[in-house]
Image 1 (cartoon, rainbow, N blue to C red):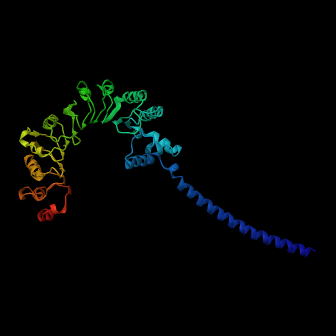
Image 2 (image 1 turned 90 degrees about the horizontal axis):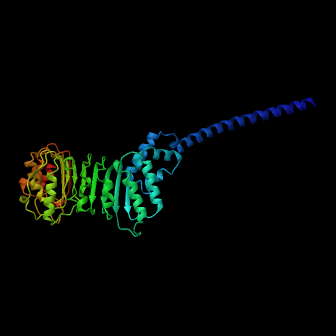
Image 3 (image 1 turned 90 degrees about the vertical axis):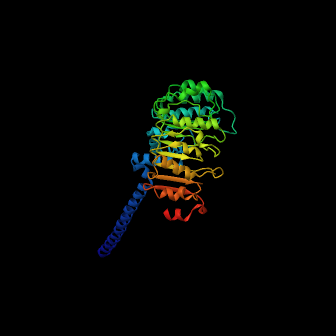
Length: 388
């Protein structure tokens, strides 16, 4: 009897030893799997561990990549990012610049109470940072804006005019009188102004005259009469104007350029080719470093002693003058023939007379760092190709 019991005990101990080995092996496997799960969780929860500064950079890159900075658009990127999780929401709300661009398109943007509430939310989230405002009318199948909603939206935006940094008014069909009084002498931070097809009464033309920080100006159709601090303007964009066939408007345009002594960058509008350059008074812009011209034979009236970057892109239909002749004349007259750092040419006839060819210009330009040619292959001559 006793030997049998002893054998049974030995058998049980052997089995227990085997089970312990299995348990130890399973525990080791469990530990390995736990580590795998931990590493996996760390990967999928990266947004919980990255510093907020990194997420700020990611958000900024995302918004710039999608060119979607309008915080007033409920379907915009910043709204989507702020609804992913609490961490992302905190990041989205932490920087006022995410909410600083407000583009309001009428009549679509003035239809319901939700538009007013969303605008109030955006203004609140922008805190006291600078605002970039766009007011634009557009063709839309939706009905005309609700007058009461429209007034409330404008009241909210205009109340913040003291911190506007950028203002774009484009095809604004509303009464400018609603904007004149709230804006007059109330734009202390405005740096950039863009006007295109805005119905402004003569008595309202002075609304932007006293803007102490205004330096960038874009004028579109019908906007030459607007008053502004001309001695402050460093960047002037007139490329959106349609001056073809309007002699008086062209002369007014040239007078405007001549009355902006601080100009550093100028973009000229479509001009046509039937003008006599001698009809325009010679203008010297002592500080201008960058010129962009679209079919402008009147370039012969300009002298630009500090010119560094030039861009000529005339309309192929109206480019019946020797653009390279005008360009070389400008460079010689301005003593800048060898000083250009950037040159862009589009639709410019390269097969000009030898003394005015592109080759003759490039051969004397030693500081050129950027050259952009948008022309057809047959426009190139052997000398130009070999020099390039």
